[in-house]
Image (cartoon, rainbow, N blue to C red; front, side, top):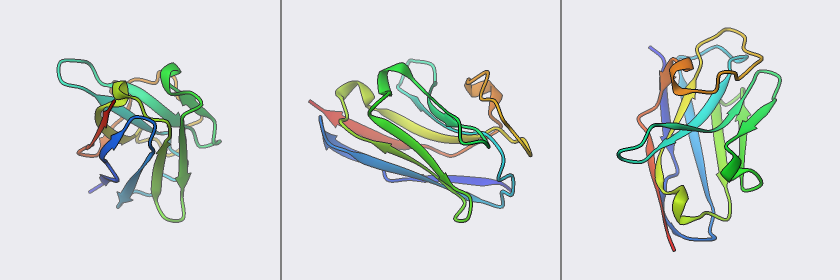
Length: 127
């Protein structure tokens, strides 16, 4: 059974940094598309950052230049380095895997195109 588990969330001040890590268990698709999404109560889940098997990345416009997605296939982990955090980054963050044996395009980069999900980790940024 595929399992994804996020870690690294917490509460910080605006301008500070947090690194989220997603650990994959029982998951062997090392050429899959992976992503980070976030959600606040009452709003739809939105894509924050994604990466293809080629290493091509896509970012939400509001996080470009501040967030960096990376993957380590040897360790079965996906990370999201978040710098210069803002209050509007406050959300529950989820990691996800599309579920393809090989994935070279993130399009469409939407929650419905991802099969496997973690339980999420809360990030709270105070201004």
